[in-house]
Length: 187
Image 1 (cartoon, rainbow, N blue to C red):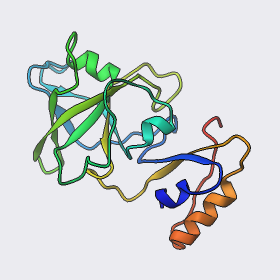
Image 2 (image 1 turned 180 degrees about the horizontal axis):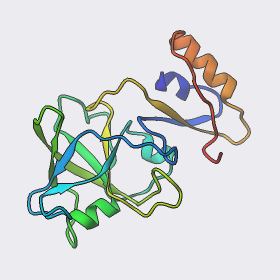
Image 3 (image 1 turned 90 degrees about the vertical axis):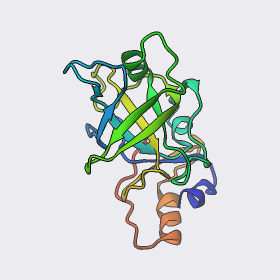
Image 4 (image 1 turned 135 degrees about the vertical axis):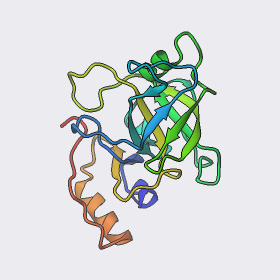
């Protein structure tokens, strides 16, 4: 679907994500443990929100990388588990050190721990509300953490009105998938 939408006239790029910034929602994939880190609770856990995104996400929403790299199509379920963290996460957990190449443990609901390597750091942004202070945030690739509902972010030429074309493209690829909302990022 993402590839089909990307071929529409005036569309410059398409990305997918589990949560939409500034919609007040959060998404947790489980606890994070970091060896050598001592959090406010006196243990090695980090409280962070998560988002599951496609490789194009950071460019489409114009969230600049400040270190390392974003996700690529090579970051699949068969590869090593990777993450991109925000600058606040990096400063909090690894102060004065390069976060790229560091690892943390992701503990899922079944208490299984998976090591995840940080491959990039993005600038801090607002995730839940515009008035929030920066907080630790983790991005993981959709290919490694599949979810059932994804929001498409579409960057398009200013002269195009993509709502109708987007609905038609979705209907062409998968008629049973509803297009719930079409809203500009500025709105």
